[in-house]
Image (tube, rainbow, N blue to C red; front, side):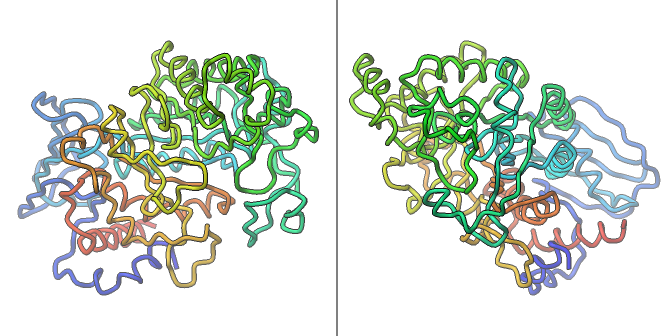
Length: 490
């Protein structure tokens, strides 16, 4: 069975409840009025209507074909995506449509497992079809470094390849590599990385589909692959003597030595390169899950804290966030970071990305709630793990793939509300949300596609329509119609 068939089988009573065949439109349009008849030709005419909102459109289908009105190129593009989902001959109708949220994203981690340009392009194609407009590209982490930065050849020589990975079926994420040796497969992974031409090709491919690429360079934690390439940027270089990225999942205690001016300069060089290659407004700097144990013991970091009036190691990360956010701002960019980076004295211009439900706080990592961050002036992107993590089990019968240990069903994904629990007067600061694909347990493009869809389609509808979405029953009927139409075309 296909992933859609399995997902829909779990919703069989809902999928069979509709007396009239629904149109296979996902996300649903904001307003749709059907008329009698069908189009006799496939002619499409476009015109500009400045009264329509950004990314919004009006689509009219009658016997003479289709007419599109939009105030900008994005709106016209989304009208054509809607038209492409309609069966032929197109039914006569009128649609008025516009998104509820500006940030409608999908994230891909290529550090744990690497997928390559063609898989990324296929993902972008499906994002565009579902009117998602932000591709958050996670390119550096403890287990792999995926961008070739001029002047730092060892980043791909050492950081883009690891000596082993966890075997399929295992979940090693805590403890040392030695303690998890039995879980490793002993197979060299890589080198896998993108050159500048590759990165620019993906950026252009996304832009043609009205998708902004937000690159992520993790700091000051999750940098073990970079430290494997340049151990001198760690607090204790001897810990990186093997020059091997982390071979199990989870979090490394060795992080960027903020007390080392050369280490800070290195990360500035990386970000300067990223700013040149990626033309978008946002650069994600990670900021999550950064242990302070090395900073506490490091002589350079102790001297740095004394010189800068930093009370303790826990406040050292806020300095890093301020410093690199200012560095990006000088280049016309805005820093985005996971919600941990909002703790402490952090400029309001930093965009927070909220991912942790309260039970996932983790020892030593303060949660700044979305409401608290918004009240301080931060804009927020919502990606709570319990609604948006597509590496979680789908709850399907006979699912052949391995997942992280928690569960996110299709129905649960459709309940996603970026503004839930946020006071009305703060909601203007919620940019939107996104689905996240962490790939510890995702090995290839088939595995990825199975896990992303149709749950990402549910998130796309939540972000396009917000509170006005028609409900899970209606969504499942349209999803079933879309799957049937795709099957007929095959």
